[in-house]
Amino acid sequence: MKAGKLTVHSLIMIVFCLAACKQKPVMEIRDDFAKFYEKFRVSGSFVFYDQNNDKYTFYNQSQYTEEFIPASTFKICNSLIGLETGVISDENFVIPWDSVERQLPVWNKDHDLKTAFRNSTVWYYQELARRVGAEKMKLWLDSVGYGNADISGGIDQFWLIGGLRITPEQQIGFLRRLHDNQLPFSQRNIDIVKKIMIIEETPDYILRGKTGWGSKTNTDTGWFVGYIEKGDNVYYFANCVQTSDFDNSDFVTSRTGIVDLVFTETGLWNK
Image (tube, rainbow, N blue to C red; front, side, top):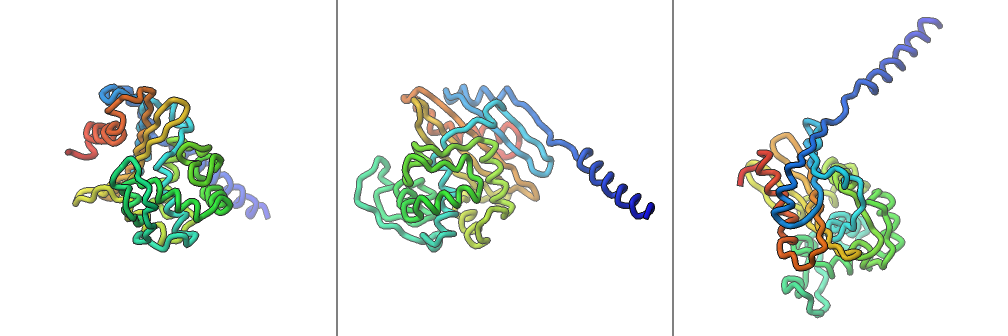
């Protein structure tokens, strides 16, 4: 009995030791990234996670846990929910244009899931959300743990001007679970969404991601979130930009432009 107790005790101590000895992620602060935000005349924050080295790189880390409207970055989750509920069958599922002229000419035609994602066609995803319905949408957001899971403000508006909020930390967490196939969706549907997320594919890397642009309380918020698969490593990123200057012509390009500058300076890619 004593030997048995000793063995159990030893195992418990080993478990506690392993937990206590587990290394914390490496944290690097890059205040010098401010020059990239100044270049585009925006404020904001950047987080970059290097999976193999368990390393986070931050600019303006104070925003890491601050909530922002997700805008079109929600299209990643919205696509998964649409597929999982059977509202849309696959990436080729067409929703006919309603003939309402909108501000971007590319939106004014029929779209399938892959073109709606690529062109960030708002009306397609609004119709998708209406077909899913508020009850199922809320159940899925709770199941996924997406941001604050708040769908107030209308089933076709909650991620645009409604109550849905997400932090850069949650964006990274969601993308990591997506990449690792740990979200509560079928592998088929996860694979479809990963495919439509591809922005660039080269012999050296694959870039997947989504931009977003939302307005709330006299401030424009922009996003570019995603991940890069390069060699045997994965690099996750979330760039969140803000401006109160609605005449800032650099705002739109700041979302992806800052990411390009950061990754060029850090040596992740050369363009």
